[in-house]
Image (cartoon, rainbow over all chains, first blue to last red; front, side, top):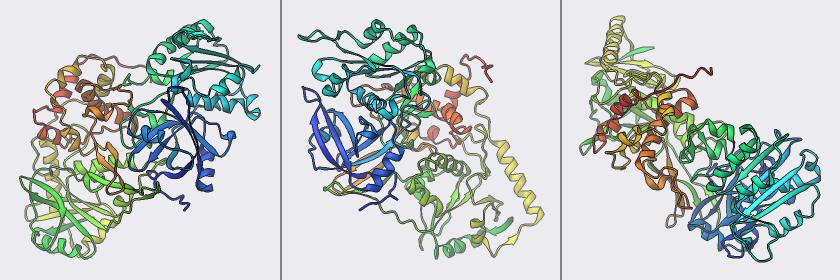
Length: 285
Length: 340
């Protein structure tokens, strides 16, 4: 039953449209969810912006915060990729097409796309944190949006080639003339044609120009820690470097208290922050 | 409007309110007092110069409450919440002020908490000023006071045989319809009591530049020093009237998603799935507690997020005293910012 007056704690009903493993080691699974109610769908897409996240809910197990990995133009579904970690993500991995699931969102601010208009984008991702950057890239790729942005430079690193997400799409991006793509793995593998090394080193090697550009970094903390200084060294201003943060979350609404970073809540005021904003906040990550 | 309520009439008045309201007032429960609903038998009014152990925030944000009902078929519905009209009698000003601070958390424009709002709307708050200073409180230090009116519909001042009833809102007015207006003499007497009580509260620490000192010494050894004797039991946050953190868990048997009070003093509070913990030891957790109250609240709404009720001082099992911690923080180095 459509119920648009539900409390912000109550998930909307969704259904698993497709569920498939994203990595060869089966640690990552992608779920594409369709809406049970058309009002929910309209409300979702009226608010949705790449970089936002949702809380996926499995009854009896709990909720997990996951970044949205699809662009609005892809269709009437929402994509997430979950790494198998604890109770909820194990339950998410057990889901198959047709199963019901709850979802709250979209939550958070997302990427400030309006401010990035006409700029070159340097997109730097590592591991499974690439999901929201995938949504961003897909969004920018759409013919209606492509002209709003300049050149795209993508750096995407994973530990192994098997852990690389969205493989077919990314393979096709190498053919695109409107973007430069650099894939990397941490240790050499046979038949690997791209970079070998850690993301910060690849960024230094690729050396994207800071001229009229913004850089977006999403990855594990250790990658972010070394990539941010590399970008500063290349000449990016702290205002032009963005990252998406994560902390343990429960409510996603700025009430339960646990994802605070100084006076900001990552769920409500983030998850996307510029380095300039982060520099003004305590290092409580 | 200032009215006079003879104390002898109070039990009957409280009983008369019960026709329309659930009346909560502090009653003795084992060694402590606790806000409980009034029934026929316990009309005895507890007169005590101190706070209840559990703050009345629990009447607005219960220790545990269902948020969502779910089924095993994966459907979700709002948990039902029926709140009958109610009166909270004998709230101390520090606790009333704290509930008002929490309003800014739960009644934000972007996301309003429907459970909080429902309880708020149905509640009339009758405050009882503190004419006897309490041992561990420091309300005047943090900018409030023993007769603060914030967050109250009525403020009572104890005049010995009677209460001076200060009506602060329309909803409060209807409860005291048949009372006489207080004479000038009694009003002056009340004012004097209020001033005396205010002056009797010692200034526990200086708040000037405290925020800057806390913020600029984020990596200082000070946090190690002040957290050394902490056991991490969390009572300081559990009984704090301005602490609002909660956990959300699924109760499978009841088929409910429930929120429970939580505490930033616990290790698992911020422990992430990857094993990383931004606040791995009591040093970081103590820093979070103090910084939240004395720095982050100020950034958010311009007020200190502590009303000086003194519970964290009274109930700490190892005698950690936030007043002493903040006095020590005042000796930390800091730079004045000229960026204004």
